Image (tube, rainbow, N blue to C red; front, side):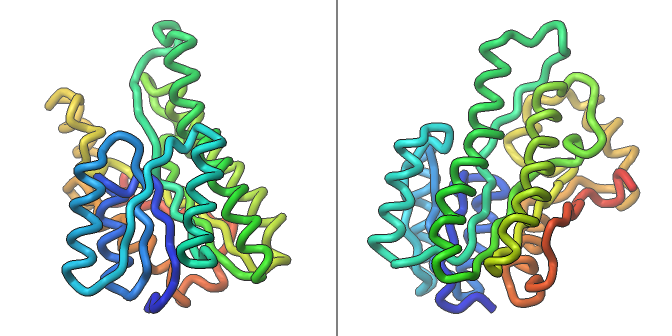
Length: 246
C-alpha cells in the first residue's frame, strides 16, 4: 500500500506512534522514527522494522525547538530526498483544573502540542509543495472537539490542532497536499497510567463498544489515510473512540 513512501512519525517510539510506525513499515513505507527522550524505545522500533526487511531510521529532535526540527528535516532531505507523509503524533498530556494550572505547565503543553505540530507542518509542507503532493496527519483528541473537565489546557492544545488542520487543508490543497486530523478517545497507552481506576471505569461506561482502544486501532485509521484510500479526504477530523462521543 505504501511502497517507497517516506513517512515521518513524530513521537514514534511509544504508544500510538510506535504502533503507527510498525504498521506503516509493514505496508512498505520507509519510516523515520522521531523521538526526544526515549532513544532506547526508538531504537527498538527501528530494529523491529529492519529485522523484517523494512527500512527505518531514528532521529532525535524536540519538536518544540525550531532549530532541531529544521535539522531533522535536513537529515530527511539528505537521506531520502523527499518526504511523502508527515504523522504529527508527538504530544504531552498534563491534567489539571484551570485555576490549578501554572503558567509553566501551560507553556510546556502548548510548546509541544501546538508549536511542535506547527513547526513540523511548515517544514514538511515546504518540501511537499515542490513535488506538488503529500499528506499530513495530525493527532488530536476527542477532548479537542468536546472538552473535558480537568484538561483545560490539554483540550485547548488539541482543539488548536483541529483549527490548524482545517486551515492548512484549504491552503495546501492546490498543491495536491491533504491535511487531516485523527481524534483518538480512551486509548491504552502510557498517558492513562496515572488515571485512577474509578475514573477509567467511568470513561469505559460511556464507550459503547465496551472497551478501551488500542494504539493499533488508531494506527489502522492512519494507515487508511496514508494510502490511496485516503487520496480524496482532506480537512477532516476522524474520531477513533469506540462510539464514546457522537
